[in-house]
Image 1 (cartoon, helix red, strand yellow):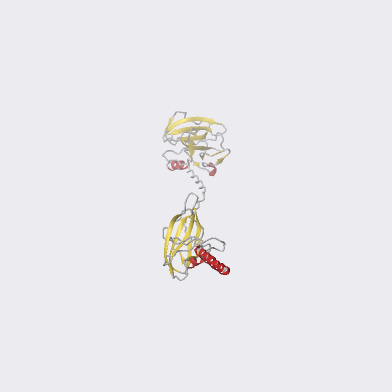
Image 2: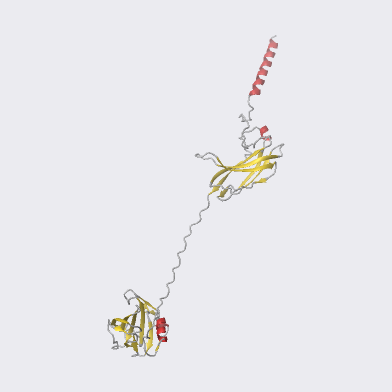
Length: 332
């Protein structure tokens, strides 16, 4: 009897252990229990049992390039879905703003690709006007088969990847070249009617006699008119004599007059003792002032003639008198 009781006890214990095993969750080789499959948004969590993966779509490939790009560009995306016993699945590609400490993951773009055949490589076409602002994004593939089973995600087939969108490059600051200074126009002498100041045979000489020619320590500010000593020198226009003076090492005997047109005329190297006007005297056009000489710093008899816009040596400036002299010579 004792043997029979022992056998019955062993049978009872075997049945109890069998019942306990039937209600306990299946364990992984490492001792962790699998979580039940779930989710209806086209994807599920990790840790699925091998049997459930075989019955659900998986992302056999998901290619996204480049993973770093600038604002204004979108990555190239292609994928391939695999599932046993199914010919096609409905696919969406969703782009989430990556979660941060201050913000949770947020959906920014949802592209409905539509029905996709199992095993075919598909290249995504982004909808027009799709834009991604600077930041990190999760590009996530979602699929649902005809029975409602959603994309399985595992370490081997996650079906998602991260893309970083960088701000636009700032254009390099280039210092604009300083505008070239506008060329100073050559002084222009207004042409007025009048008398040529040298009343006799004359020449304008060579380049050395011109306005702007180089001189020792300065530039020539007038036009030299070569003529025989003693040739009469007259006032070109009506005006008022303002200066009569002598400069031993420069102008020699000279006369300055203010023309009725507002300009000042400077005439110098007069022959000694020939000046017949005085400061403050009114003169008419063609009225004699003196005679051609070679006093002061002069290499030969000639009249040095200057035209000043504004007061002579008192804020005015000299201008090239040649055009005016030629006009007076032509009208003589």
